[in-house]
Figure (cartoon, rainbow, N blue to C red):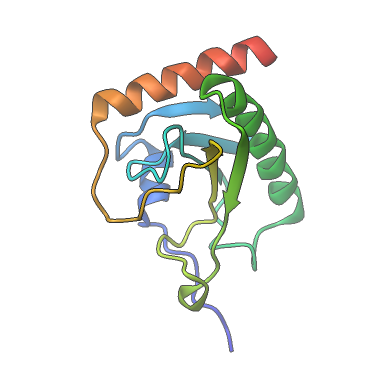
Length: 145
């Protein structure tokens, strides 16, 4: 079975082009990180490749390596910025695997002991709160270099 091709009008492609707003946290030549607008925990961040990639099944190895390096940077910053006890990573592939947006993305979610993830309800978080969380992550990224 052949997977569908990459859709250049997916929401993350639109964010990368600047067609849709986001709360950017980090960017380099290969990756882009921004706040999830429906966070499962405070500080929930998405990391995506800049190159077109539907998911883990078609990503180029160099892009995957770059994504994981950025995921690690974001995770370290989240540990500081949100006084996290741990980090949860989530990544979904194709509809049967739970994927909804068909541009490869990693969910990086700071966690505190004893606090469950919020349910994914489709309800967007307060924009000012997301901006505050993005700023906290940027400041932590500057500190850790």
